[in-house]
Amino acid sequence: MDAMLVIALVFTVLILVLIIKGLMIIQQSEAVVIERLGSYNKTLTPGVNWIIPFVDKPRSIKVRRYQAIGGENVAVVQEETRIDRRETVLDFPGQSVITADNVSVTVNGALYFQVIDPERAVYQTENLIQAIEILAKTSLRSEMGKMELDKLFESRQEINDKLQLVMDEAGNKWGVKVTRVEIQDILIPTEVEDAMRKQMAAERERRALVLRASGEREAAIAKAEGEKRSSILVAEGNKEAAILMAEGQRQAIDQVLAAGNEKLEPQLVVGYLLGLEYLKTLPEIGKEGDRIFLPYEASSVLGAVGSIEALLKGPSK
Figure 1 (cartoon, rainbow, N blue to C red):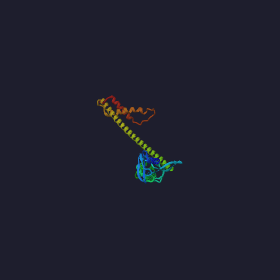
Figure 2 (cartoon, rainbow, N blue to C red; figure 1 turned 180 degrees about the horizontal axis):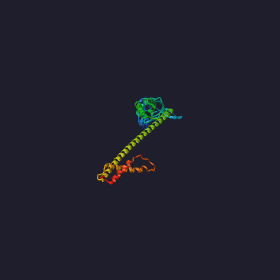
Figure 3 (cartoon, rainbow, N blue to C red; figure 1 turned 60 degrees about the vertical axis):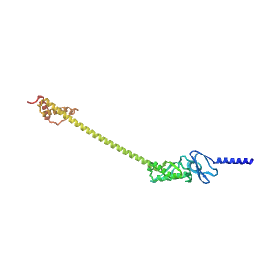
Figure 4 (spheres, helix red, strand yellow; figure 1 turned 180 degrees about the vertical axis):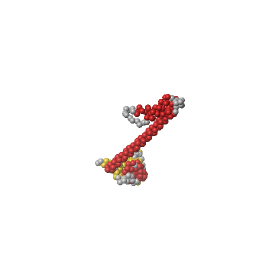
């Protein structure tokens, strides 16, 4: 009976060990690749899973991460059996890139990826994170090396889109989906930055001069248009005034002739009206009190006065 009890206890312990060793609980957004006797068997999904102890074994995956050590980002490679299927960011350190116009810049980028097929992520590449990082760096150098420095700052989104296409093509083979590629910083040499700053200042000065010249030109055009319009209005006013004056004089002549029962001579009436205008002008000429010499003919004044006298006496019989 003692031997049977010992065997039962041993058998129970073995069963408990097998259960403990064979039971695997996978967290949400995780996966585990299981090999049976050295070959791929299955991929464990989140929840409670059972494997055969000592026969089934989780296959580890190498993960490359950067850690701040001594003020510098140092790459650390670790092996993990649980594959994180969440979206992961890979912030690789700055690297030197030479543009098409031979300017060396330092570019710092970030890559977002997600493991879609854990089996491919384990078996298609020896170090998944390192492979993604190196491909991103080489693709980044290739795309940025085709552009000049001025074009580089304007084409971040274009570079991101091209990098994502390249990474997607390789990622499909590795069981990885690259969701986004972002260029964080582009650092340029100090002397190049100073030159760009001077160039920008010169460009702004040029634009200011162009705007100032354009404003002065517009102001000159507006002034000329205003003077033109003013001259036209003055000419039209003078024209209308002359017409009204002539119309008034004509009406005055008609009224004088009508007052004389059409027995007055028109020339006499015209001379009379001219004489009145002439006499009205004389006080204005010496208005300031200065002595003025007027070269006029006495016969003109006498003629005007004679016309007035003849008009007062009435028409000749």
